[in-house]
Image 1 (cartoon, rainbow, N blue to C red):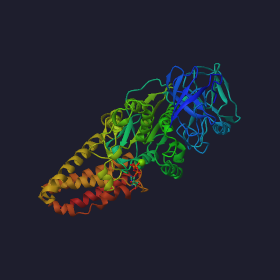
Image 2: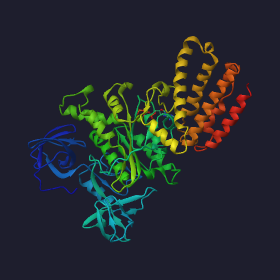
Image 3: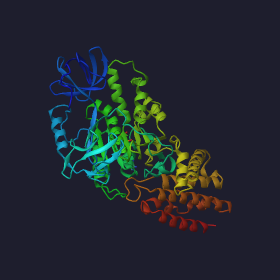
Length: 578
Ligand SMILES: Nc1ncnc2c1ncn2[C@@H]1O[C@H](COP(=O)(O)OP(=O)(O)OP(=O)(O)O)[C@@H](O)[C@H]1O
Ligand SMILES: [Mg+2]
């Protein structure tokens, strides 16, 4: 680390878990990183009072004693951003996971050196003498996958020098703009949002490939969503599906205090899957940041900012990035742990009073922006929330709901019934559904909003009638209400249910999703017509709707035409009942 070694060193006076108090550090600032003890354990200054500083340590403080040296580094918590991130796994502080545990210590230096030694090719996109603006692309670096790695100008000016064909290392200068040097890798303080030009009006959807989301609770690209759900309701599975199948350019998957084997699953899953859009491996568009439950707790706190920072880095290149954080509740626990040790006055359920603003600081870094270089690009944020005991009134859940545009609430009853993804149609919401409907209208699917409204009302009506039927019995309901019950079942099992383990069903294109919903809605309409014409409800109920229910698994992930064919066949059969 290029710290200011001349700053006066301090001495550790108190250690309480990740909380360390230091006396005598001179000329330091809030958020500065300090190296503690002979192992140079990294810690960040979170409070200053005279010459006394309170630090939040990112590594085990087990070996630190009172009297140990505390040395300011002159740096904040920075991520080294450059080629070599995609397809790899890092810890909460963006250290390669395969490398040594200590960050500021000698092992870190060796790991950094290894990363810096890696050789890259720089392919200029400008010529010497060209005039560039801040954020313009100076050149590209072929990385492992199909995500174009772009090196941007940090300042406006004239290109005065460009690296030649020889391989370059991360720390090498690859261009000069005026007098200013542009290196392949840059260091950025992860807690500071990277600058943008502005936030353009308008929305566009992110396609997740999960029907219940894309059809009912869509998410705008650059917006934030949360997935609250009790223990084992399928949060991680849903987030992993989104990581695999959403139409983003770059995925940053932050495993935050969850099980380590789940992160291994993510890596394995992505490594073997092919990205249909690019033909490359899905892993090559993904950066994994893992701070699992067995790793130091406070690095969790940093890990979500690290994740956002990496996503902003790719956004600035012009890519649409998605940050997935599993789970923000484990992150909030780290906040609580630290603030309790610090003796802060606890607010609700022991969380610090700053919980809401910390959550806001995370979700508000989502956005669809015009980059400094003039490209439209986005950071979308999706966070899991694991309320203890499934209690949706606890602070992390209620605060989160205020800051997100879409809420995908997982329902315990649905999960018990193995209806996956267990996204509730009573507690979920999508605040941008209306403008996204207009977007669909303008982009080839004018029926999107109407289809969504019909599905929502069919689900609500079917739920209401199911409650009633439980009391008075289905056979006491009039025929047209029995058709609503039938339609609700077809909609739930034939459209909303999605098998994450099926080749055909794990991912669903927008066109296939629309065709499946049209299939169910048309079947319901036809059944209603049959009832009106006097066909007994029981006759229709006994009809074999297997072809409707199996369509999602029978036809390919993007085969809307096959669904349409099936619709024609099924409607024909139904007509035969009249
Ligand atoms: N889409 C799905 N398809 C099939 N099975 C699923 C699906 N989603 C969840 N499951 C089943 O539910 C189990 C629990 O899912 P998951 O681990 O995603 O829940 P979670 O909410 O993340 O749990 P935790 O609270 O422990 O983090 C899975 O192991 C799997 O058996
Ligand atoms: Mg989980």
